Length: 111
Image 1: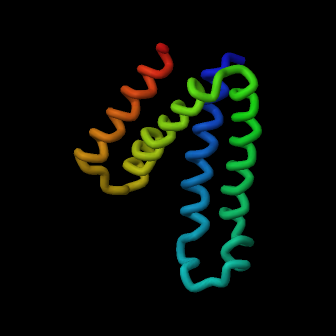
Image 2: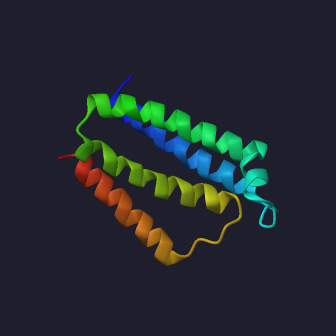
């Protein structure tokens, strides 16, 4: 599998982990740390992060870090899109930031 596909899988798993952790923490502000950590969705989020890290190791084995790591920036763009679909408010300034990040990823990938 090409390195860029592995990178996108890793980034997607990382974004999925963030939204899973967020879902697991809903209504948990007053719970103890142990209760928060034992929430099924929180555990699932940690599992997704672990899978993301394992996939990322494959990326690092194929590419230079200076070329691979900027692809992590695509996670910002993906999280904004998913956040928007989930009902989060996304303003023009945030969209501008996402566009700049994506432009930077394109520049790095072509170098």
